[in-house]
Length: 279
Image (cartoon, rainbow, N blue to C red; front, side, top):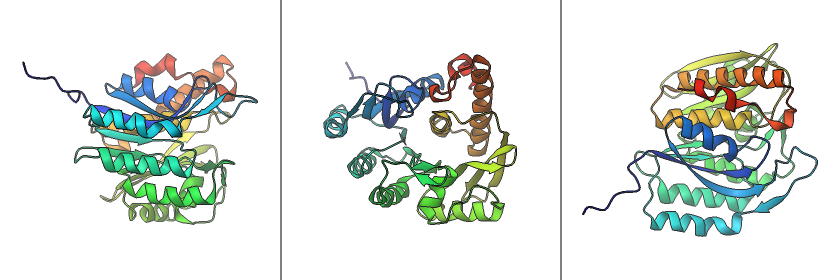
């Protein structure tokens, strides 16, 4: 009898932390990617009881286990149609991800990197200059990059400002990132008055601004939702600009429902209630 393969279904390796409460990282990626008809295979970088936006949390660093975890995947002969990365907590974790991509990438594998480094013009407190330089190396492996405006500025060494960005400036930054490796880039979180903008850039010549009406306050995990939809659509061969529109629209709808429920901002968005809308 012929031995069955572990690779008869499309799957994405998602490298991120696990937060038991707060709707972010793998806790968001797993249901969304699964709903979009792909197997989600988590590779945890750390485990949190709830994310760091709360006053207190339990934290367990998983760095020392990651290589052995990965080795077992290799022994199983696993192949991935997508590799998606999120927040990485140290220089060593970034290097482990680089090794993972080198080890598992095939001709059909799409690498989607969300270079989670900071927001509102600042690096996160846990993020060092050394890590920023390592992330600059890691993004060279990406087919798709999904930085927010802050992260885009840190990756391109362009001074950050909150408002007043022209299309020309945004697409010049995206083009600069494309020269490193990625052929599809979306810069998110661009303040445009009553709207939030997303600059979509592809090396095939596509340049488009996708805007969404600003809905109340910022919420945890929306970037993870955004990146998960982009990753799943990429593997499912959905047009990139169409995928960005879908992600932007879905998050807006999530925000509206969440605000109606009176959910604290750190609890993320109630995506579960409208997950059925994702196709």
